[in-house]
Image (tube, rainbow, N blue to C red; front, top):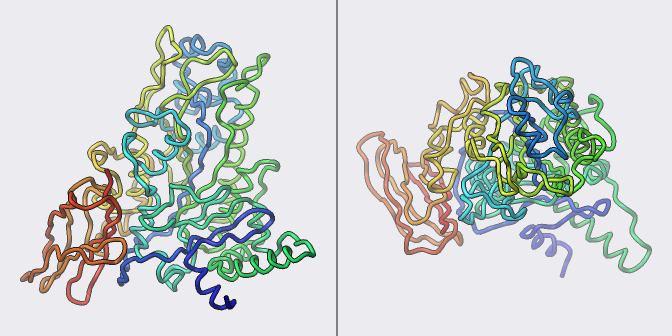
Amino acid sequence: MKRREFLEKSVSVTIPALIGGYSVKAFTTESPLVQALIENGTSTNHVLVIIQLSGGNDGLNMVVPIDTYNLYNAARNNIAIPENRILRLNGYANTGLHPSMTGMQRLYNENKLKIVQAVGYPQPNFSHFRATDIWMSASNSNQEVYTGWAGRYLNYEYPNFPTGFPNTSMPDPIAIQIGSTATLTTQGPSVNMAMSITSATSFYQLINGTSDPVPATKAGKELSYIRNVAKQTQQYGATISGAAARVTAQNPYPSNNSLADQLKIVARLIKGGLKTRVYMVSFGGFDTHSLQTTVADTAVGNHATLLGKVSDAVTAFQDDLIFLGIEDRVVGMTYSEFGRRIKSNSSVGTDHGAAAPMFVFGKPVDGGVLGNNPTIQPVATVNDNVPMQYDFRSIYATLLEKWFCLPKTTVQGLFPPNVNGQLQDLALIKNGTCVGSAQNNSGNSLITNYPNPFTDKTTIEFSTEGGHTLIQIIDNSGRLLVNLLEKDYPAATKQSIVFDASHLPNGVYYARFQNGATQQVRPMLKVR
């Protein structure tokens, strides 16, 4: 195969650039999406940073109940944080933080941290893999959804991706994930919407144009050739290098802290001018079944080290955002796939549980504590779980509406059936954040559907300016299934029609809207 032919064919698959022993992937997979002219993007420069705490974080030792401390101590007397070591919060006496989280305490006292108590979902799953899928897809626990909540949002903003990307209006990666391979969170209906950088080392070797040496063998020559091809197919490499080069100084970050290393890169790329809206980083080790604390001092140990690194990294990140002058543009959140049981085990640890607190942080955040301390029974058993107070999808929905400034109806269409009626509008972001943004102007969204994903039927809403109006249903291969609507309207109006897909297999379908010279495509996901 000729080199040029190889390159032309290679853009239709994900090719990892092997740098420093890690892979850096730009998800540019070609797919048979509908070729349509779509300009759907919401006008905002806001950025969301998602921090995944992998393993199932023990929320009761991170956000410690003070008003029910006796019950908390009785339930886990071999790991409970001493009451006199709990970090107090200004103006809120009922709850405190783990003593290793002095940085998060400072952010709270500066009104830059919202603590959301007991976040979970009905019928929790205690498998790491399945629970992670549920959090990433925002699905119901008894439902499999193969797209991520952030991926669906990004697909709404950039519905033709990857066709025609990068382009003049969006020359940068739509989402960037650092610290692991691509996850379900950023998976769109057809392709993953994120570029994945597997380590901080990979990032610096990418922007410096360096890589590990290859052996002086035939295999080494082949490896060198593959690396060169991969670099040439890396569409966003030059963009990222250019953004990084524009930032020559940053505020200090703690050493020997992989989360801090990742967040430092995020801050640098935001300041460097990338239009990327979603960054995802990860930090593991929270599966603390044993030796969560030391026997001699329950305020130190493995969990304390993890929480301290999270606190130090987030605080350094916030200080760097101030130093770089971009603090107003960034909001972050932490999550873990589940919490831990109320009662500790005999191995000085905790077992897989249900709900746990989440942190939402940043200058635009409406700080404080949302919710009450978890209910703890006088005699806790090994089966007792923290009951859910807030559905995690309400966190997502609020951020989409109040931070990314999407219309509420659009946000509702991004979640699975039977969820939308349960979504709450939470006090996470300061009022007025989206004033003057596209939140109050849904004119760019000419076609939506609700629910999305759906099971059998979904209602398609559309705005026509009058005249000939057409809605076509197209499958994932680009095949026209039906002209769902073809009608002349006398004047501008908002209409709706039901799409019955009960006879169709599960998968992605597209509603193509055409009105005069205007056309838009709406992806719709049918699930079980």
